[in-house]
Image 1 (spheres, one colour):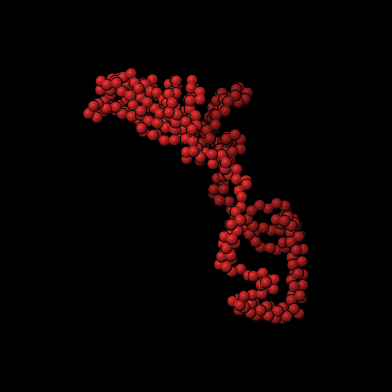
Image 2 (cartoon, rainbow, N blue to C red):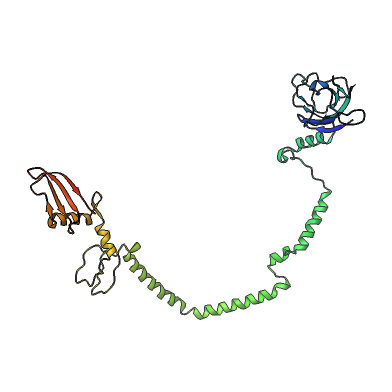
Length: 334
């Protein structure tokens, strides 16, 4: 008999089996096996599963002649309540209405258990229940007095390896012999520091007082200046020669030296600044020049034109009535 193993409750059990002819060659049954060709017995008795719920037969399996797969869902007890239980032992028998190589067949194709009584799986689950999630059940583990000597021995070994100061040494604040040289050096340094204090003792306070007075004066001056120069609102700079970069607000009295001329780019920026809509100062100048000093045509008619200085285009084209009122003006600003 093929024992498949011990399964957890509500598991899926897969049973592969084969069919052969008299010579042992793989052969297909007279027709495909069905789930009704299976009987499942429980606990060595004639009690069998009464429905095929949860039983699936794949015949043939993977399109391979003579290979079949039986799938059993032990979590499906529809129509068979109480059949699948923990501690149960199950045997699976093939008893088909089909023939194999012309012969009627019957074969035990496997057996399995569900959390077998006293089996490893059942005991493991029982232990897990006792321990609980994250060891929640481990609340009363007894201490074995025989462990005391072992624990004390391990602690002694650790202290000996570390070699900490003894209680008497810590109370007396003493040093072990190996640290005496360090203590002597510290004593030398302490003597040097004492000598420095003696040398500076007569003048150090005076120097500190002098520095303190200077700092006080600095604080007074900086208080007048204010945060970020806020107090610098009335500075008298008589007869100063300096370069100033940035903006100046307020009044300047006296003469001003040379002022750097605007660059060509700066002048272009001024001329190209829009003064009305998208019309720039440069374009306004062209219109004014044409109107005041350009050639004109169409006087006395309804269309008057003013030419540019090069006489290449109509800079201004105006439509007027008999009274000279303008009804339309077209500008060529290029």
